[in-house]
Image 1 (cartoon, rainbow, N blue to C red):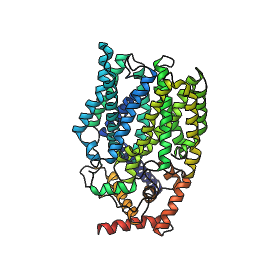
Image 2 (tube, rainbow, N blue to C red):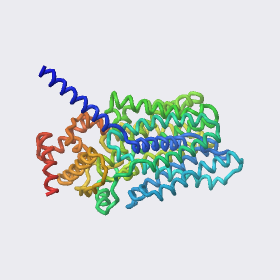
Image 3 (cartoon, rainbow, N blue to C red):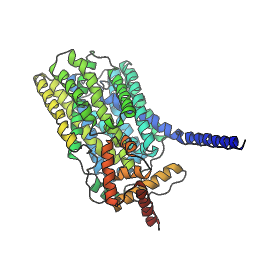
Image 4 (cartoon, rainbow, N blue to C red):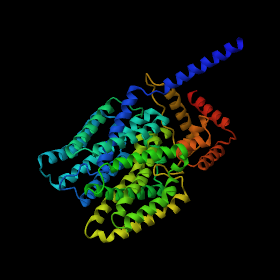
Length: 510
């Protein structure tokens, strides 16, 4: 009887603990509002960037698609560059007044396109290009805002929110593209306005205001990697070229309008499958090599074959290319949280090269679509194939290089301790506390930013496989960095590492 009672009490305790864990894992209403708003924003960006939805009578040609979309991506890249140089970036993305101003700028292009469609008047091309540039800058701004807002969710929830938001955004995009012209543009305007309304209901940003100490830390630790920058630039160029081909086929009625929406859903499904079955394949230095044969075959089919075979090959090739783009964005959305620095800075700096590459790709597609450029199509395909094949050299010499941080920075200073805020999740407080302890240990032992990331997971008791899955790197890479951490700290076990980090914190608080 006593044994049964002990077992019964144990079962009740486990059940109670399970209910408590499930309750802790539930999203709050504000978090759900933020995820919904990010989903709608993602859908609006996908629709504007990779469909002929916002084309007018004057811009609904393959050449003009390339020029207008290239202008938009160039403006986005320019804004990302400005964000990395602007010292008040955190204040910029958290200001409600600035957000409202950028919303008005974001609505200019679709509003004018709707008026042109309904009233049948034509705006001068110069003004239309200016509107595309303004729309690109506003889209880049809100992507930085959402990167900052999502940082309050924590690592696991950011990963889940990214994936499910993108999948739902693909479904929404497919639905909007199936609508007739005026209705689709109206739905697009509603997406923009609704995402902004949900942004206001989202959790407040947990990012601290920018300080001069932060700026010195970022300047010392965020040098561009030549290898990572090259890979991102070429990925973006290929994505822009193939996206231009698909959009041109859609505008001519060769492909159905929902092609792009279906492509985004496929990207989400492939990413989900790989993250569950083979997460190490999603490492930024490895995923390009894994997909290399498919990229080369797709470029050969698209560049050397005539219609309809190049049209058939274009959508699957776009899925592969956008999988690389999405993997890049997903990794960067975690970077600021893991390094305890500005999320919008990490996102903007990491996205700069791939977005710049997309601008170049769209412009190249516009050139190839001209009468003069059609003779250069085969040459362009050969150049892209050679650039892609260079992955074999670039991605294998130093595969663990990103466009966000270089591997060997100078010794850095830890970011300042956060101000205590009322009504904060206790688990989030503990996690943030440990992040700053790890940041202090990173400074004290001259660890690299990547080693600082891994240190945080080691202190939490995670093994190499778990860390590799979380950071999308190879398990071998994690073990190598762990060895370097142990060497620099002069330790031989994970428990010694934890003790040193705890002692470092005790010394700070004394």
